[in-house]
Image 1 (cartoon, rainbow, N blue to C red):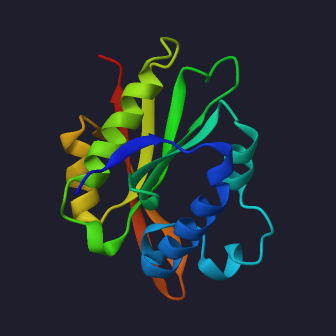
Image 2 (cartoon, rainbow, N blue to C red; image 1 turned 45 degrees about the horizontal axis):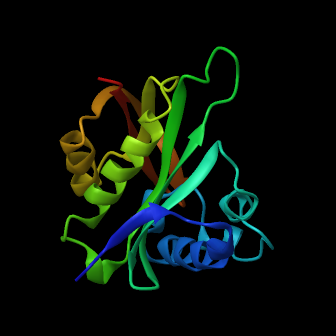
Length: 170
């Protein structure tokens, strides 16, 4: 299996849409948005960012041939006092490719690209606290916990807590 890791280009915004909606169907407990909310939106936030080549909002992908099998993205802060930060978002790997280190390699690739910009000093993320495999992957990448947000998501009568994690430039 040969996997290519790279930023999605403008012609791949529809591929992003397909995998983003899939992740909301298959792993909705780990994301704030729902499939039902997103499916009827004509163009998703990151679809537009990809199509427009937005330098502050990017999605990276793992490809097996032409098949997009995993995604992760980031939002770069743009305010004068906050532009030293980026927020890691939307990490997802198709179920049949899990357990093969693909998310780790994809995020590691993206982190290297983010830190190529010397003005970025830290990358933050939020992860559902009971998503242990994701937490361990972030820890392997060097992220450390800096906070805990109780009852961050509410789905029906069930609450999910979120760990807040950060990676600082070395």
